[in-house]
Length: 232
Ligand code: SAM
Image 1 (cartoon, rainbow, N blue to C red):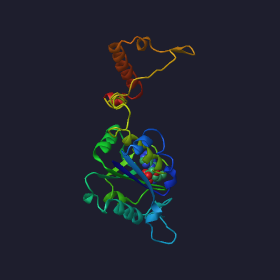
Image 2: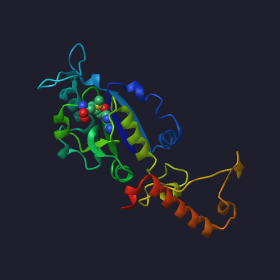
Image 3: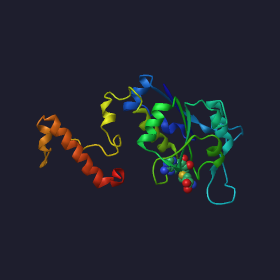
């Protein structure tokens, strides 16, 4: 069982997010448990303040360290990453992190039993959180979101579908994009003719060897066109 704890100032963002498709099924099957926690629950002042102005000046606000340290300490038992259980990962969603890939998703799905995801907001999170608590600083791509919540959803979705037993057909993971360093092959379904567009003849022949060859070549053509960097 994988446990995902999300630390956020917008827990309601996640209210229905895990009630669909593969994640819903994985939760029902007891493969994963998800919980969104309100960061303000770990404040101790009357106004439940989670942010403050940046030292050194500049625009915007920064998420304060104290509530995040309190949250992670309660959830892991420690305020230092060296003391976590080896299967615990504390993820900080950040455009300054290493970019998330299928390989990193696979690593988390195979090696973690607890993932804590810290969602930043405003100008980001006090750097001491990253220095002491975070095991994985993850960016979901080279663009800036207004908060870490959509990024946390992306990470959880990619990891949960790789948990053994989460997908109906485990072959889907083997033949899909990034599993062999290239994109997946194009897919077609019925009808064979639609609006003057036809399905490649070979896919209708039932010749499995020919179909496998066509798929391999089509996948390579698409990778060359859209993601030549993967073929290097
Ligand atoms: N000032 C920060 C910077 O220049 O790197 C950007 C802060 S951003 C407006 C607010 C929060 O959104 C971040 O703390 C992070 O949690 C989240 N975020 C933004 N872009 C992200 C990305 N590409 N991947 C993951 N999280 C992201």
